[in-house]
Length: 276
Ligand SMILES: [Zn+2]
Ligand SMILES: [Zn+2]
Image (cartoon, rainbow, N blue to C red; front, top):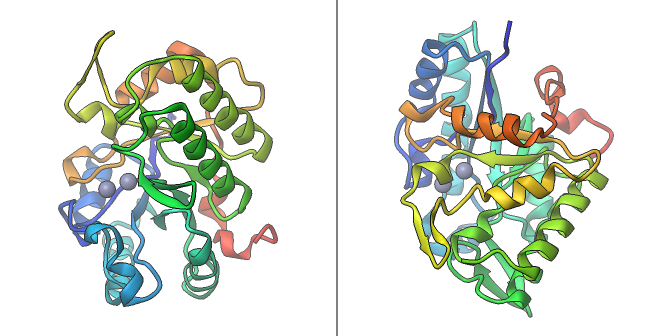
């Protein structure tokens, strides 16, 4: 039997997605998935820090209801393994919150690193729109690698998000991609082919229209890096998109990439893993 799993989905709480956990679970069951990972955008540790970056995440006060929604969906759909996760920005100051509050105290099953912001010369830049130069690309790659090195994350979400703002494929993207891919292999952390990028409008570039991400040349290069593993996720922001990973699965086949085995997430909360 082919196991179908989706480790990256959201809820209405992040303010730019729709639906409650049970709505995502219903679609997962209907589509025959065995595992649904719920990974909404994490709140930041204090109300003040949560003001940062335009309220594109749940508030701290919603953490309890998020957990409760996951528990209720588990009860409603016992045939489905529902994992309690969170998508986190790599922000050094917030690592104790991720480690102590989410993983240790609240027993989250796993965290994924979704870096939508990165540090470039002591300034925070948005990865969606502010990567235009080789220098910014390098800073983005270095930031992502620090997230890997922290050991807190089970998956690196959309590592090729830079394609949303950096148009071309050149020596800078090749260098940055190699750095990311080689670090992921070294840290043994799976990289995600994110299907959300394929549901977004195509981006016009001088070389023609293409999806903002996943970036084909990035994954073509990934196939040459020994020991690298990947995972296909929907990043569903709407219940209907749960498990919609056919096209990224097809990319995995096309480039001959190696799928990660994430079944350990299903057995024990990562917070009990000595690695943390
Ligand atoms: Zn989102
Ligand atoms: Zn996401």
